[in-house]
Image (cartoon, rainbow, N blue to C red):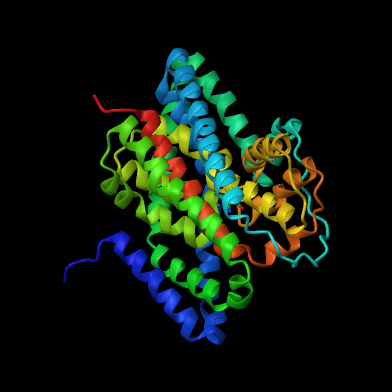
Length: 389
Ligand code: ASP
């Protein structure tokens, strides 16, 4: 018997999950644990993957000149795509005005911790950073050690060889875990569909149109154009290679849980070298969130419109800027974007109550923006690699 290609089996898992959730919403709790186990296994890999792949990536890039070139390109890509994404969403939300006439913000916001302190990026205890899965701190530590390794080269030969092996070992374990993806995705999608409140969702139809429209423009037009121009890779072929990661992002709603799959797709399918993917992807999964930035900008404007508040051009610029910063600050876990939305709302003096309402509806939006976040990371990797000589 011929084996079904892997990306198809995930797709089949997803469609079957959706069917199951629609037909037997009461039975979903039986299969839910499968999804929970899948996410747990992926999360288990995230800390060692970020740590090892960044140090190994920096070591492979080698010289300080190459490193700073890579760093500047990466930063330019993150900021550039973020600006493009938020521009599109601000345009759409002003055009459609989905919040006009809405009177839904009854729920009170309890306590959401949106503290965002740059000082928190600097770790004071390596083990705390690891135990608390503080990805930014882990990236900080990895970059520091990576730079030291580049400076010391042959003095730390054994450590470098060990890192190379640890990297291979981690990818091996990752491949095994990814083998469970079709089942994990099946359970996650069934659970999502089974517990969706379709009625409440239809009430925010225009909001959904703006969010999904913006995400589609960014994911299907803006990013593919950049991919074509800067990497020369065929768009459809690349998208097909990335399909397992896109579907995993969609069903887990977490860029960091998807990271092991993103890295595997990039190195195994798209044949990207470790130096670039090992550096760009873990950082991208943590800070590069175009989908989240778009969502935060639209959600803030939506709340303002629903409350009858007219934001001036300058205030909209503040929303623009804060949405980008808040998306960078958002953890790469489900609904994290809603937590940092408090930063955007407070910056223009809007009440935080609306977030409670958005929380209740967040799942489908979170899935869609996470897929765009991960797609942005992968396109970024190819763009930063540039055209193959
Ligand atoms: N769930 C998103 C992610 O992991 C973050 C968010 O927008 O809530 O990329």
